[in-house]
Amino acid sequence: MSRTPARTYNQNHSPRKQAKGHRRVSVYTSWSYPGEANRDPAGMDNRFSTMTEVRRVSWPAYESPQWADPGRFQQGISGSLELFFWAWVRFQKVVEETTGYAVPMFQRVDQAGFTLPLDERVLDDTDTLLVFGLDHNVTGQVATPEEIEAVRAFLAREGTCLVIGPHHDVGHSEDLEERALEYAHHGDALVPRQQRFGGYARSLMQGLGIPVENRWGLRPAVVEGTNRSAPLTVREDLDTRGWLHGVKNFNFHMHLPHYAVTLEDVRSVRVLATQPIDRTRPHPFTNAGNTEFNALVWMPPGDGRAGDVLVADSTIFSTLFGADESLKRFWKNLATDR
Image (cartoon, rainbow, N blue to C red; front, side, top):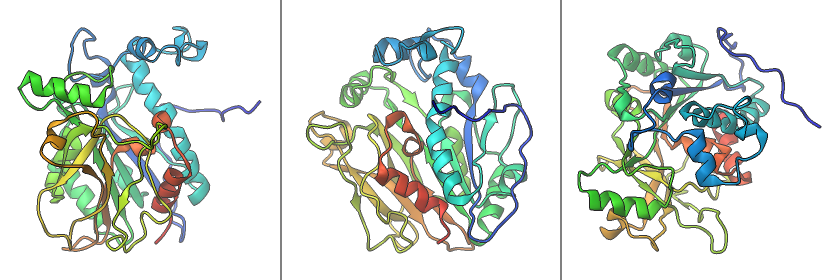
């Protein structure tokens, strides 16, 4: 029986040396772990589920002792947060096999309360930085001017890439009937009627002049008779760097953001892939005539920026929602020098 390697926690990061042909990939999760874990479970909106709620809704999927035994796994909101770390392991492993470098997983505020702004401690030994925008807006995570300038300097280096993805924005309307319509559309009992994510990533994008906003939480269409997402609509003519080479689909997730581009200059902002929406379930976005949402947006180097910017949701780096060869191909594309 295979065993996981010995795991470490609560120690300083060891910087990786630059080596030609070997990209250094890092992940920065923009939440405050205590700020999320300490939310009142009696609150209906804008929080993660407790592990007990996950087990109840997903029964019997998490009823093995690994998840259900309080002596082995946390049963509050913190347990749900730890599920994310479990589900990112496959991505870390694929990238390490591709690049030869381990993938550090940084948090804005970690389990022990250590705070790490996005600065040179994260950026100096990174070539590809993924910012997972999983902070609920109510926790007040906002990029400081110093952080914005640090990321701007990072992107001034040749060969760098920023992958940033504020998660979904469910229930932004004050109209409760509209919120109910959204809820019925995605169909996930673990998601509140209002769950607004990504304050940190949105503020960082605004500071960097990335004209993209996360909107809604949309359920992808699936291949009939399966729970696999319908194939992406890929703009190969715009994908001149081959980010989606060999990629046909991402993984299925019940509520994904539409990455709305707020300007019309397709030369500087390119929508590389859109995802068909499940139109059997009404939603304000589809009621307005839309049939697909923006799933991957690319800003090539330009305007003094030497690095690339990709806007993509953190869900596609998680195995909580499955991972096939197409998705792993996308991970390898990100981790490979171009």
